Image 1: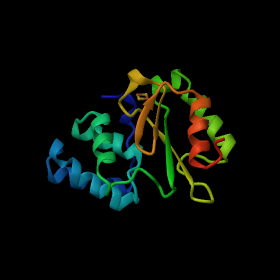
Image 2: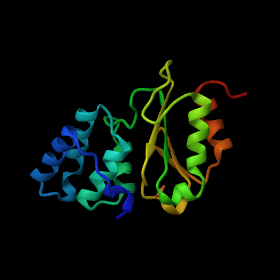
Image 3: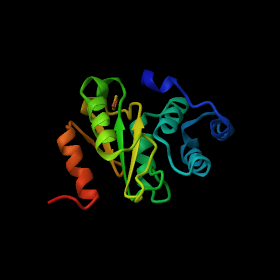
Image 4: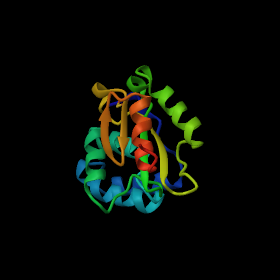
Length: 165
Ligand code: FES
């Protein structure tokens, strides 16, 4: 269980999600219904909330993200056409993702949780998505990819934005 997921969201939305999990005694078979509740409550599947759900249900975060990205009904996107999730958990931090996050924030004038004014790009920060061996990890529209530097990350964003040559 990643230490980073110990810091759980504490608000009414999270309380609603806890109630869903409690109805299933915090068993792993609560996952799908819990993801529905997360989506209804937050409007999308916030990675920090997914990590906390994984922690509480005792499910590896990578499996939770896998389910979350398998079903079309679920969205990891706040609302943009494309979503870049940058993991800044310990392993990814050590391997440079904080610099990548800083670079993306500066280049695209976005802070985590924001979507660009033209709705093309949403930026999300996650705390360990459970694939530390691949650090530094990013998720590009829900697809997990590892060992990418800021140049590759920028190239992906530029392609999304239609700026690639
Ligand atoms: S810190 Fe674990 S996947 Fe990034």
